Image 1 (cartoon, rainbow, N blue to C red):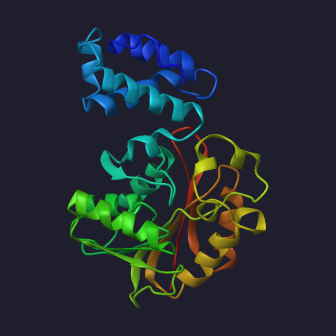
Image 2: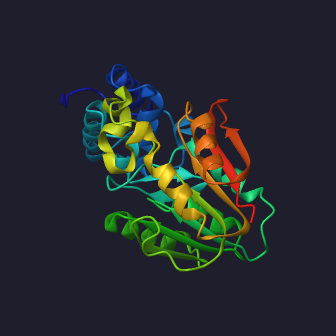
Length: 285
């Protein structure tokens, strides 16, 4: 990377980095701001209040290094080591998916259900723990279990649990239901792999740096959703809910799977962009 570029002030650093990232990022200025704030360890307001504040030589070099990594496509979340989800800070790494705003649709819908005061909730494929820990933090009387096949993801979720001081969650290593306690859950949620194996988006953006096992599923992306729907029947209380995130073109397909498994009150919910994102169903007996 060129090291003699003038980045002595906040404003100069942002201007240089925005130009550098213009080709490789869809949000070059935002990426530049997030990475500079990470280097400075300052809140976002600092950049607007002190645009002419000087960077030390060490800060300039560290910032240029991060911008170089971002220009190679490495996700900002991996570079700074965290991502906000549901207004909570989550550690992230390349062992699992980076939490996305779209997934907050699932959390919002889950919190709106008429569940028992001390509901038992299961999150399958928890990754960072974003869904499970967000639900548990909002509903401290709920008992939340979270499982993931990846030992690295389980360790990361436990680290996030400790960071957020969430006491009402239990995080376990499990291949879907293989190690799930024999409870009658009031709600089972999941953001499973649902991308087709030949999807062109797998070679674009942040997903290039995320594990394929957390993204891709056979049967045109429906295999894991089908497996969850079939097995969940034996783990749900009567009247309990199953809720999964899926692709924007998969709403009808997921509804069909749920109907085939005997679920009722099936509903697909759109995300903030107006795309089908979450499908909900109920065990009727």
